Length: 190
Ligand SMILES: C[S@@+](CC[C@H](N)C(=O)[O-])C[C@H]1O[C@@H](n2cnc3c(N)ncnc32)[C@H](O)[C@@H]1O
Image 1 (cartoon, protein in one colour):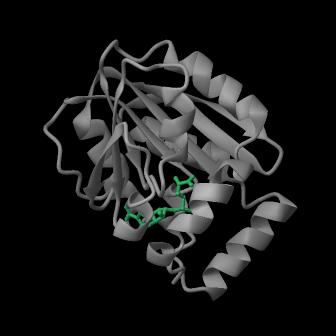
Image 2: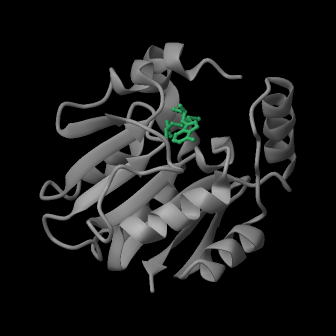
């Protein structure tokens, strides 16, 4: 297993490097659709890099970081609420959130289907969904997937169309954006 609980200082400094500029632009334009003053869950947040990006353009939003590793959350920004927990069992009421984002974490989840059902449960109607992932069908992605397997991670990587199909089968509408060996699914709870 990757010892995320001890990697907070590393992620605090280097986490932003995996996110391309074009993705940030797409995130910022998607953010216009998030309800004013809404709650945004950063699931598998690590030190909260996605929340840092989004807070830069939407100061009204309330950010909740959720991660099983307290050693990651310790390095989260002060404007966030922190919850030690798992994406498969979210401690939030039905339809209580305006957006859920997952950055480079979905493939670490033990039970991706359960995590998708939980996202659907906690999002309000037309709630925004964003998943940023690594494309294991590209060379760099394949290399990362192999290393993660060797390290004993779940490494549950999905191709962009397969993850899109999974989300749509669970009540989301979404589109794929590609960034060479990375991609994002951005959409809404229907
Ligand atoms: C590669 S890090 C990405 C962190 C952050 N989103 C970023 O982009 O820097 C993956 C994170 O997923 C978390 N994680 C692993 N399993 C999880 C689960 N079942 N539910 C929620 N988070 C999980 C890990 O603790 C780790 O912080």
